[in-house]
Image (cartoon, rainbow, N blue to C red; front, top):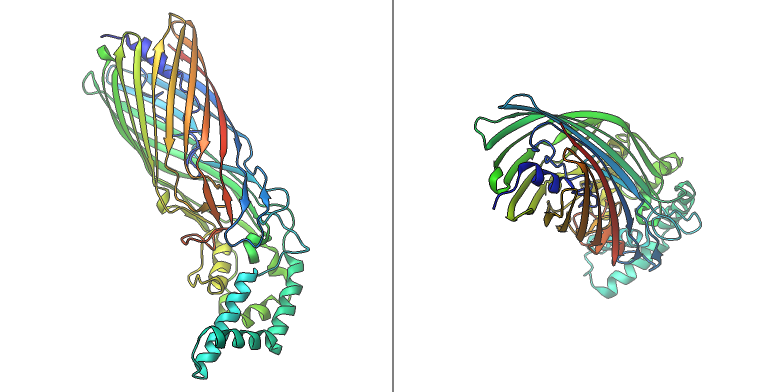
Length: 475
């Protein structure tokens, strides 16, 4: 069967809300479809997401209180201009907001500071310190370590003047913890300048530079973060550059088009403005020294440069005609979240200092992921008449590991999408779409727990709705 190139392009242009709620910080999906449209082309769109992510304290949390919806609504725009300069050369400018986060905890839970009950060290951390001290004393006196001897030794440690003094200091330090709820906001913007070369009719080779900015802020609050209850970081907007490259092949007569695009990682170096309220406690040095944290390590807690590297990715897109005025499409995306982490400089130094207290001798990160993200979207688009077209799609996302960060506690998704398009003229269209997301259940862990099996909350039975609007013009 044969489909006109213009008809096929119009059908597939009605695909807003492509990413919307993906793994880790992924949002837009970084599509190249606008650049691969025939002729000269312009589009602008906006996607809006309304998520509902709630859960319950569990795991190492001492309580099992409910956690209200912590995911804020957000929107992100996109735009693209593609010019077919000659038969063999094309040029494009693509704008999107590829990565982001927007979350805020409220209510009464381990992610909201409660000055009356929160403590610098959790009960489990204190018990671990007592146990470690008791075992060391038993071994020093050549006493076998078993349940009976260990219980007696722990009682002696807790009754000792040194431990009583330490407990008093920790109690005083509790007054220096933060107030409010945990929240995070990350925004990025990306501008890609792309040059395409078509050596033969059906082949398109393209590459270009990418300019990207990132800014954000995070506040950690509540018992879940222990010593870091009161940590704040602000990252002023900073920029970095990267590149992309890809290849596309098409057979317009049967509406066949496939493309493969690689985007590089991008480094951002910034001096994050960080503060940790517990560092204002006058006797903190004495307390940490009593816990085995050396003075030399404490002296390294200063300001310094923070590097954030947004991940590399690969997009594979495919479409083909399956009957008159009907096309099937699919896209697969891989993002290298496994190698991604964020460790603000001062946060990292404090984490190195106190890491041994939570069995992390090398410290820990603010955010990290254990798996790469894989996502796929498949569907069918059909032209109904000269002015109307529609599409239906099904999407899947693997997530980036489970347990996952408390700042984004979901594990992948399934979604179902519907799109409709109105073309008032052969060269213009208005498209709208909606997607419903079934978000994957996830166990949430703090940075100090990342890489292990411990967690502080469980999030399940969550969902999201995404809406999109796109305007297009061919000239």
